[in-house]
Amino acid sequence: MMSIPNFKEINVVILCGGLGTRLRSKIGDNPKVMATVGEKPFLDIILQYLRDQGLCHAILCTGYKAEEIENHYRKKNFGLTITFSRESEPLGTGGAVLNVRKWINSNPFFVLNGDSFCPLDYHRFLEFHARKKALASIAIAAVRDNKDFGTITTDSIKRIINFSEKVPGFHLVHQSTFVNAGIYCFEQKIFDLMPVKKFSLELDFFPKLVDHDFYGFEITEKFFDIGTPERYKQVKKIFK
Image 1 (tube, helix red, strand yellow):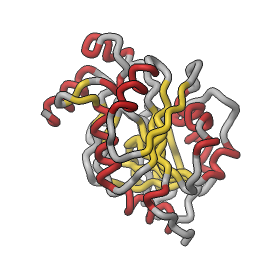
Image 2: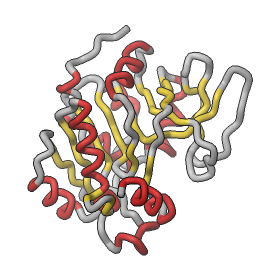
Image 3: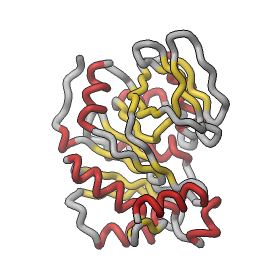
Image 4: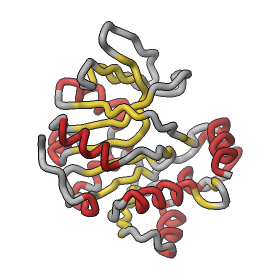
């Protein structure tokens, strides 16, 4: 089992650069992570939960309407140290992570999608990652309807053996199919495997990690995302 770092020192990278094109009818031209849920931006919910888990350092990867996000979080005190990484051009989810390499001080570190929330236990996630001696770990969940999500297949020890973004999954003996909950734990060595500059974690990178120490941390907690008007409406109702 690899050593576990001081939990409070772990960096959390949050991907906030999404355009939110599918939500235009609901949020106008606002950034997706600033969509209002329970009279506060959705990203507030994520940051408050990270603080309550005991995490202290967040890096927000901004792109579209970066000033709006940065101005809001410079004025608010969540008990977190917040660093901003602004993209001058869209880099994709993978490029955004690679772009903050110089600010990552912890090993491992967490990465989150800024448009989804899951109340998982980050301590347990970190322990799982260390116990597996993983290069990368992903929080995975079983869902009844996976048509809007990529599918992940694991073997009996939770090693990920197939990652297909938004492609129907398959079931094999002693193997299970899950979806990506949008929360990751990476060793810093992950940067050496990343392609140059612009790429998607889900489409370009994760499918190629199946030949490495790549594991799925199964969660039972429900996860919420605001990627479509229907799911945004559901989240607003739940968090009202």
